[in-house]
Image: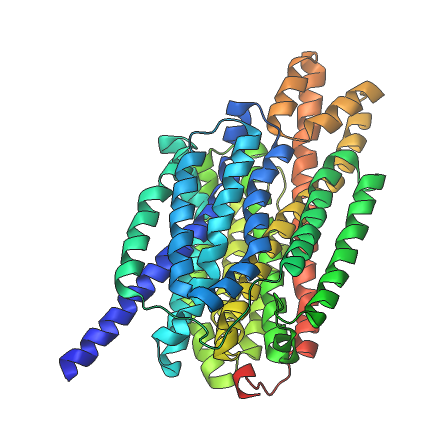
Length: 513
């Protein structure tokens, strides 16, 4: 009997390794590309603003479809959907390595996002049937640790691969890793589904939610070039809000909703979802901007920039078990609130960067915000996924991961837009002080779209003006990054107030309602 029990325990943890490996690949793909964008921009002659779509396409496709994937996994089997997703992710990642145009890269990343949408909710939803309730926090802790290592270490991994093997290696290397995860899941993970589920996918709700997300992200991204007072951008924001309201109304009336609104009756679930959305907006936006800042302003290589952003991974891993223990003893509300405070404080410290700021200042900020992420990651995942009734596990995990992916995409688009707005204003002031003309100002505004555009503009200017514009460009970008990062740091601190109001002191899991 002891041998059998030991064998079962080993089997469970090997299965978890496969689940974590698949999820880790998704988060690595989500985070590692940002540090390679300047290299891709130079090699393919594509502006950095346009290249944001390679990041956003992955997040948007995954975020838009992850709810439907969670619902399908409840209906047809979580293991089955997971295996399909891993195969799609690996296959399309390999295909994208051979594409050289912006539309091709965007399409390839979007198709990878479709596979990721099938992976994330299934890997989370398979943990409760695999493990007894008392072991689930450890399993969720392992999943979240791998997810955050993938996300936090993504720039370092991306920088190392880009420097050693070229940016295309970010794509083709995922194929054999996905194949290994596929084989482990196939061999060790049992099937799980909602035996009482019936019906299909709410197509109207799916279209409404996906269209709302697309309009919002398109407005944030394109508004950086056209201006946010452009009628099209304003119209897209209004349409996004209208579609969001329409989505809620549809879900209240259809028989088989994409999102079972009963989930939102649990205040602890609402609090966990809110914290997850906030931390992904902040961390994804911050990571994207700092990766570009370290290369564009400070002159570091892709590898160096990735390694300089790595320290947050250390405190994430160190504080991850602390958050789990705090949640077990004191409930999840306290470590989540404390984690958001540390995230906000660390982000504010990281927002003190400038063209000549010492690295230790950024280092302290990364360590502090990493500690916050480590504290809150396990409590929110355990609350959001293990708390709801088992028949809603796929939907709950899908909604949880939708908030992660869309939060990340919104964070990148929003922070880039804020940095562009703040930086452009500062650059114009610096350029006027340097004696440049209105024509020069127009060129400088175009140069702020990306380092490749800046180089093209600078080559056409006389040496003296070139130095003035270059100094203004670097100062503007650093100022924009710092201002944007500080704004999202304040956003994280303000979110703590909302969280404490939303999440009651006495937590009752949805499963007990």
